[in-house]
Image 1 (tube, rainbow, N blue to C red):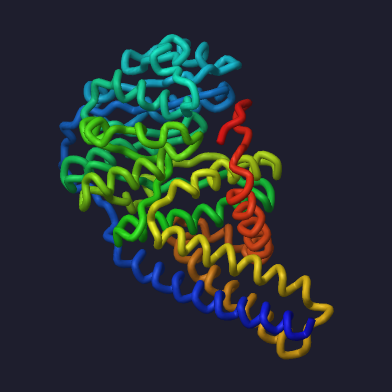
Image 2 (image 1 turned 180 degrees about the horizontal axis):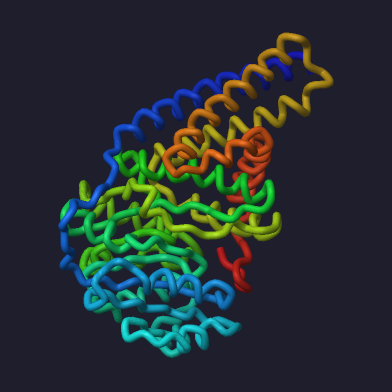
Length: 386
């Protein structure tokens, strides 16, 4: 067992060194990404359609619509379309109660031509919204989000002045009340940095459906979700990959903290695991080797660190030292990486929970990574999907 413990610890250290090198490079790239800034005096000309797919969001849809309808964007250039995906609560009624000529409600159940077997209904809801949209630029968010006042101006700027056909924007959690929620916020900071660096370098393309925009024509020309609509998730990441392949050089990350959309973290361990299983379920659809390789490295690193702890009773002093160094290398690499995001998004307060979150991250990535490989079925908002 001493030999096995030594092999595990030395493997963990090698993987940790590679991991640290990747994060160091990611920080360098992140600092090179120009911050998106709107020129003084600029007046947008683009008609925008905001799409908000919603299912059982009666607790959140009111605040979401309030923030969307208070945009510092010309009202005559704005329409807001809520696509109700078979909600079983008062979501649709709450949307109808909002009196604003810019607001439209579409109920997916009223369009049987979109209700195809073995097809993800959220993607069909978004597709319906695109087909019914009158805007040249589609801007998407989720029904449980709060958007900043200049949100549409930033997306219109990227479309008009930076010639982007697809723009992914930042998403942050807020109002955390537990260690689990603060862990998710820290994890999301890292995801935002990776999203920005991946898009900037063109090495991989991530995005979040809570804050993205794309040309309506480009979406239709690329075929929308035609080749992945059977997958229950991936309305954001898979679309960004497809658009990047179809329109190289026309994809951008909106790097500005003032454009960040806010949402709540999952409040319980059960809902958190369900959410992350849903995200992990689309890993088999990735066709970008750098992204797959990075995820594989982190997965193996986390498992080697855990196995090293399990083997401690049989470890010699050398194996123990190597394992301690491996944990330290990963911990420091994560700290400097997440600090970069915490400073940019003005969330330095989250670093107070960093040490606890570090151990949660190892457990989380090892467990969810395994679940994503072998258990593709998940439950989300009352539905069982794959």
